[in-house]
Length: 266
Ligand SMILES: [Fe+2]
Image (cartoon, rainbow, N blue to C red; front, side):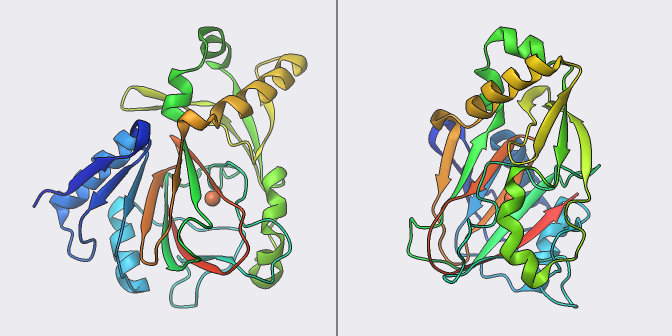
């Protein structure tokens, strides 16, 4: 069986029709190809229980551990509950463009979210910014400038404030302990993308202090230009899977309740 792949606006992500419960090796390989090509893929109407969700996720690699929050339950520690509550006063969890756990030595390659409880359609979208496109559209002088630059990624970067309410409930107590260094360019099948997480990058290496400050100012704005962004509208049982090497993502602000089950893959 072939899956149906429908590219989104500007080829930023693609919608895929496929039943993930019964997907076999052939379909999984097609999904992987689409994921590498488009950076992020979306599915509707996937009513997966935790067991079948984990089974599906394992097709993409070994599951990663999220250091900041405890998992769904003792039985399913691999699932992180990403929650927004109407009683929250701070920003939503992940409400700034970032790539997941980029402050760890080996950040997870893929992240998936399964929507369990969602507000009205169009509220609480997740935005995805293609870093393939962001790289392609970089002026040549910047392509040259960042070729050998490394970023210092910190778990206490600006996005850490969006974790506060969830950490009070389910925190592991490990927060603020992580710092890692990664190249700001990644290569995926000979295609370059920018790997720089505005929510986590606090400094650059192999560049002067002044140039680094100027680069931060320029790059953070460039990476998330509207033309590189696709905004996904959630429905219950929708799934999004993205490649953290080529996609930035962020939660958008809304008041209400939302529950997502997240799995990260190494
Ligand atoms: Fe995230």
